[in-house]
Length: 137
Ligand code: C2G
Image (cartoon, rainbow, N blue to C red; front, side):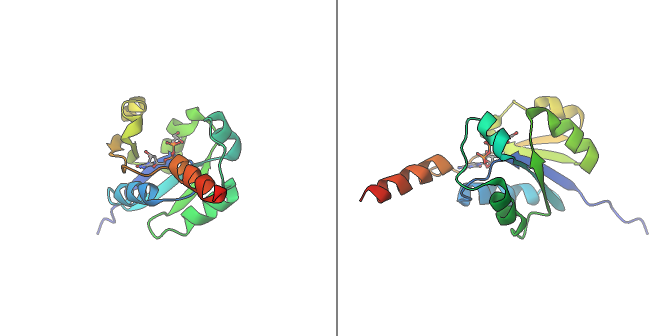
């Protein structure tokens, strides 16, 4: 009896101040296969992306690793590591939100590339602003 190799889904992000937009993305990504691997932006790479995270990498990693539909979290420390990661983890599909539509099409030579719709009305930036506003009260 031939045992099918689990279908690996790979995605990347900062996932700072985890919210329903992130959860929707991760849940739908996981539903496209059997395992979900997440490349989590390191603090220095986050900074290179112009983001100062509220939670440091180790906290963001702990939170993601405890989501039932995340199977592995590894460090994303550069824009250029995706192709290597896809080969290393034998990923079948690369998934990311459609705010990135078209940006990672070069990965199509390695695996399926899927851009999922973003969840409207929520972002880490909005959450930061809301906390700042509440703090002023
Ligand atoms: N996302 C979403 N809906 C939101 C917010 C985010 O679907 N309201 C998705 C994004 O499209 C992305 C994932 O959640 O696929 C993580 O979002 P961020 O943490 O903002 O990650 P980003 O800065 O887009 O990093 O190399 C790729 C980068 O690391 C992606």
